[in-house]
Amino acid sequence: MKMKHLLHLSLLLAMFPYCAVTSNQSVSVSKGTAAELQNIPLTEKGPIVLKKIVASDWLADREGLINFKDPKVAAAGLQPGKEPIQIYFYVIDHPKFGRFVVDTGMADVFRKDQKEWPVSGIVASQMNIPDLKIHTTIKEWMAKDPKKVEGIFLTHMHLDHIFGVSDFPVGTPIYTGPNEPGDSRFLHMFVQGTTDRVLGPNTVLSELNFSGKEEGSKINIIDFFGDQSFYVIYVPGHTAGSLAFLVKSTTGTQLLTGDTCHTKWGWENSVTPGGFTKDQDANVASLNLLKQIAAKFPKIQVHPGHQSFTAIAPTK
Ligand SMILES: [Zn+2]
Image (cartoon, rainbow, N blue to C red; front, top):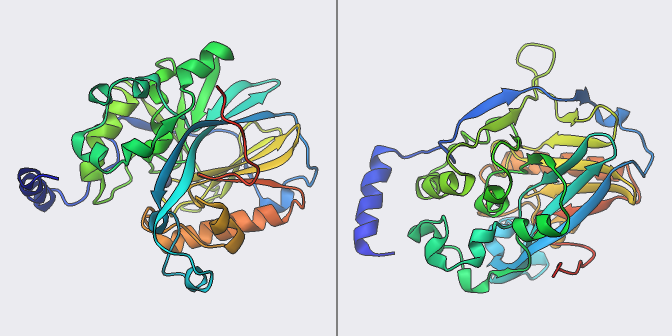
């Protein structure tokens, strides 16, 4: 980063020390029905056809992905360094309610010269671009598997989860967790302009409502379609409105953790992400909730945010 930039940034930071992740408009929406963990049926399979698609391979800092303050990290001998990660999106085909996606992979614009990316110079300089290897874009995937997408669920609004939004038709509903679009963090000063450009100018975000029946109470789980096939789980911590998903698929019960847990090692050892997480205590509580859910289903397939227990071939 150049000295001139640093000066500008420090001035800006002094004026606006905190900043929302996006300035895009958002509305609160109530969908589905409240669910409780003990009432989720123990059947393993369900009606949803789930596809997991590798949008890209990448490398990220292990200290961002794993909380090195956890004593289990030193005990395991983990060292700081670069960790191989992948960017995914998930296709949810429901026999009655149609197609939805979780997260958005990469948009076609990222195939172009970096000058055309909707990413600011400062953000690009932090992105480790030489190690980003794109396998498929949303546009390429849609050309091969065309079907109307009824809605997009964002596990959260970090850039690597929204990079594909602009390839979906304008007006496709985008669902986030409560307070996610307004999530305020020092870091967002650098990121907000890029997030706004990646989302596009007329994108309205729908924040799912997790309010309970009693004034001020919160629920953790929504049965989105109301048929016990697809549960949206509120897991604040990594970001203010992080979400995870429990899917009753034709090949068994599957848990999409989002970045409440980035890595295989983190899931196996119950260690939260490191510097990439906003609120460690809340992230710990949310990871514990996901562990509790997973423990109910002996054959569950768990999908951490950026790694896979079973390697999947990138689509060509
Ligand atoms: Zn994240």
